[in-house]
Length: 228
Image: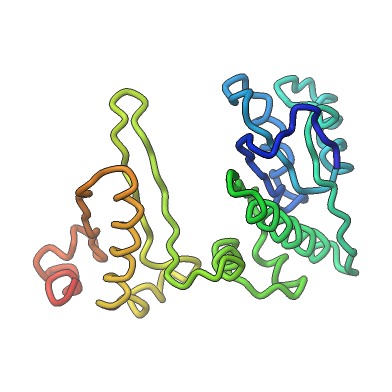
């Protein structure tokens, strides 16, 4: 693990798990960390293979890509993961353990945040890690029961924030109507309200429709009219 000289316990840390290294994770990370907009007063820790990051860097340089960070100047937690026989499961097993280690680092530093590179869910399955996504592993690792996948956006002009929380995650579209019920919607709205209340005193919550045009008063579905 490379250590930067300016690392301190009090500085804010961003821990990045590389994700599936047979995909675009390493390239995205190297390009993102080249940005001049990243604050100088934070520590960035990458959890992944230093060898693959170096290989990605050299391949991109050979393609005349210059807007990429040099791995030699990054702090990398070079995690050695036992390899499996199947190539796809090798990358799945590695990305699983990268995320586990990244979560561990964040949990040991109260002033830290986690960023995850993309994974291949099939590769996780081939490696024997039966989770439908990174969200589910995060929930298990944190002992959280009421969990939601939330997207947030903040206007750079007014500061107004828009949050979207999903009622279901990582299931087939055909299964969504079967999973939805009053108790689930209530629990997700409680979770969303709790998050929004960190930013505003009385957040306004809205529930989206299930059917096109929210059912059009029953013409395109009765879920909204009958219970939602």
